Length: 72
Length: 286
Image (cartoon, rainbow over the protein chains, first blue to last red):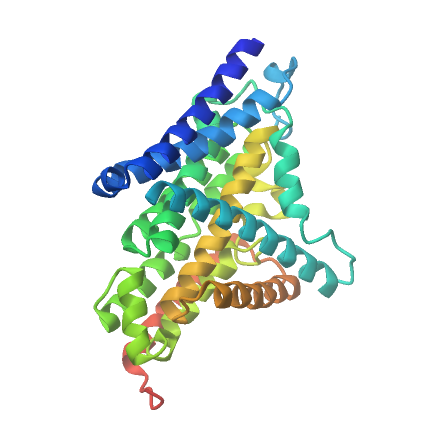
């Protein structure tokens, strides 16, 4: 996977988190009116952010085709 | 402030859960006359793994394998948001717990390794986790007339802590905490005969996601127990009682040998069955 894809994934996570926080600060009434939607978007943002940071910050090698550690 | 509250609530659950899991590990080690790792070890472990390579074995069902850790975080973040941040309805909490069992099974079978498969299946057949959770929450509803945390807390403010009314249901929920704490004798899904159970094949940042959800889960379960059965609503008191509960759980885990799956299920069902005594045994202290 290229560096550009990693940067894009993390940038998307940061933008998603920042956008949600900005909407919450700027239009609290809108967020309160649709609290289910915004709670869901926030929880998805948290999961995506951790996944994107982990995926982008960790190294890649040729281990993709490894056998399981155990059982075979 | 819903978005910020959710961010803060989930982060707090992760940090506090990680620290208390570390404390659990430390107390267990000291009881077993080992020095044990520092209390922040669980947190450091999670952060360390976040920057390590994650990859799927060649035998894995890749989509499921990659998605299980992500969904685990989603499930427990949702549970802690609904229960602890918004003090809302507890039925979704039960649903999330059941989904967590399904995900653990998915984690076990998706790698293609027989060891993780056994771990996942063992975890899924531990039925009284859900049984105790469902029955104790239903008991709480019958007594208080509320299924939401804020309603139960308001009822407890007037009538006193719920454990005095339904002690056996409280015991059942406490058993659930015991089942789900690390190295629990009642959860053989991570027994040494199958290494780390359904987690065995998860390397790198995928494992970090699993640890993150475990920390949030630990916080969430302890929080719900304290709010529903002990009537605690103050965050500072929550922290102290959480430490005390962790010490009790760690002591129980350190001193009890691990049970076989059949013995564990037997204990689960017996404890869940004891809840019927709440309707039969007179309670002169009420």
